[in-house]
Structures are given as structure tokens and as C-alpha cells.
Image (cartoon, rainbow, N blue to C red; front, side, top):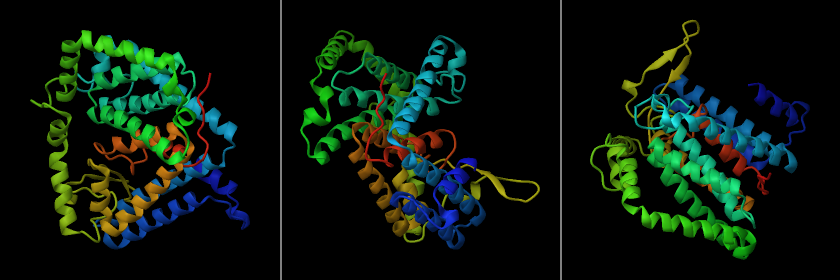
Length: 374
């Protein structure tokens, strides 16, 4: 709330001279739509409205703050956030050999965080930054090579399958889209692709992969099956079906029943099973946890097709701004959105959802990408 008040005062709205970017104004409009939709459609209007207001305050604050920073300050703050994620990696490393690092389920590595499904996506976000810098810099730093390699190992150890897939696909999309939409030559947009250091490392990794192929295949198999806890699976697609198939079926049923109106913002696919904790004094909901995957389907289920089109248009605007900002921005926003294909946290601004919103708002709030340097 303090941050929101700060950016509100700086916006000039109190003096009648509002200075806000178009993306901030469109976000306010989208949030107000969520609130109005909740009033008329949601079976739990108070739950939906408070969730919508929470998301609106956080997202507009982040977009306003990132947009309002001078380039040098954006660069400095992004560097600090990057180092914060590196610190999580460094302090988590010793726990690899202790049971404390696997406290949640005994097999998935959670590091110093509370859950492997939070640690894996966090390392994917860090890996997206480090890997994109390898392509964005003419002479990639060894620091980024090490951070990217360790982040991959930690993602494997966490057994967070969505995080691994999101990182790889996000990087591929970033390289392709920035080259396609920038209109510039590859050596200008992605100078790191011509780095001898990068290709030498790629060759070394390939050789090691060939030599230790059986051991690597076994590790990948354990990763896909979550050390056997996910049953017998042969591919990521099959693992995804086993993990999220039931949730997707419920989403589809609700979409067929309420294609135009949806069921309400932030409402569970089965509202009667939701556990809502309320403040004992005012009776306001303070907790209403829902578990959903596949963000696009979640948006259609909750807001209906017309509302979903508004959300997708807003996301497309952010993606367009990210493409203009550079490969790091696209890699970051692509990875974070793809993480939401397995665990929908984009509209839950707390914990992992907050980290995702910080990354997305940075990527979509400026034309120039903050450069992580020594």
C-alpha cells in the first residue's frame, strides 16, 4: 500500500495533472473490468472483488514504478534483483546434500524456499536472465555461463517440470522473435551467437552429453517422473496430461457451461469446495486459495470469452513492448508466462506470483532493456 501511495502521488493525479503511460491506464481499465464483472457474475463477489483489487494495486504500482524510473535506475535495480536471485541460488547450494533441502516431499529440491514448485520457477527466471545475456553480449561473461548451468541443474533437482520446459521454450521464442521483429541483423541483435567462448562451451557440453548419455537419460527420466512419484511416464506431454489433465477437464466443463460470462474472477472451478477464511471482526475474506493450471483456459473460465479477449489483448501489448526492449525482456516474459501453463499464479500477487509480476512488468514497461553488467 505504501508503494501504491508513493506512485500515486508521483503520478500527479492529486494535483490534477495526471502523467501515466498508456499501459498503466489500460491496466487500470482492465482491473476495473474485473471488479464490475465480479459484482454481477461471481458467486462470491467479495472474494472476487478483493482479489481483483489486490492484483490491480500490485500491477499498476509495478508498471508505474518501472516506467517512471530513469534508465540508469532501472539498470541498477534490475541488477540488484538479479543478484538477489543469485543469492537464493548460492545459499541453497549447501542444502543439496542435506535432508533440509528436500523437506517438502523428500525428493524435490526446494533450496532455502518453502516448496520445490516455487524454487524451480525461481531458478527458471534466473536462468532466463543469465542465458539471454549470453546471447545479448558480444563477449558473454563466465558468470552468466555458470549461473545458467547451475540454474538448469537446480531445476532438474527441484523436479519442477513446467519450469524446465518454460525456460527452454522461452529462450527459443526470445531468440526467434527478437530477430524477426527487430528488423536488424543477427550479429546486431544477438552478438553472443558469434562468440567463440559460447560455441566452445556448447561443444564441450555436447561431448559430455554423448559420453554420459545413459546417466543423463536416467536423470531426465527421474525428472519427468518426479523420481517415480508421478508414476510411469515416457514424455513431458504424458507427464503434463497426468498432472494437469483433471484440472483441464474441469476448466473445459465450466467454459462450456458459461462461455460468455465465466464463473467469476479468482473463483475455484468447483466453488462449493472452496475454503474461504474470513476476518472474525469484519467478516472480510482474507484467504481463498484455488489451484489451477493453464492460464489461458483459467482466464476464459473465470471471465468468459469477451473478458478473456481483453486480457489477451493486454498481454499482447506487454509482449510487444518486451520485443522492443530486447532479448532479455522477451526471454523473461516468455518464461514467466509459460510457467503459468502449469501453475496459474499470474493473478495471485503473493510469493511466486509477485516475483512473476515484477519480471513481467519490468519486461513490458520500457523500450530499453536493463543491462546486467559487472
